[in-house]
Image (cartoon, rainbow, N blue to C red):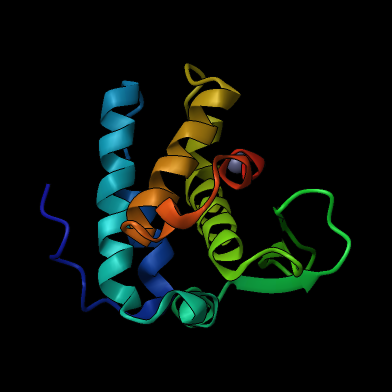
Length: 157
Ligand SMILES: [Zn+2]
């Protein structure tokens, strides 16, 4: 799969492009992990900013994404489709920046996978979580290594 062919696409289409990486009805976990890695690589090539600026950059790249910072979340991040027809990600404000960005990327993968989840029944919740973790790790390209295992474990919703 050539992943750079659509790189000049307008930012509003990036979500569509990322979703188009996985189109088969039946795919193995190995294939899904590979797709997640390719999606992360494309996103990484679009980011090109320091980690702390990734949330602002993502909001530019995904016009349908709204990022909120909340003081009292019991978990690092949650995402949901709002009545305003946009994706909302709530991020726990008190977490270190690397954790906040990792949690945001993790949620972004869930958003990318949302239509796919309706079509593929063979994957467990743990499987979708594994894909989101893999995507976030790859997109951060090593930054996530500075997180503790407990911080990483928490970022799973
Ligand atoms: Zn998750």
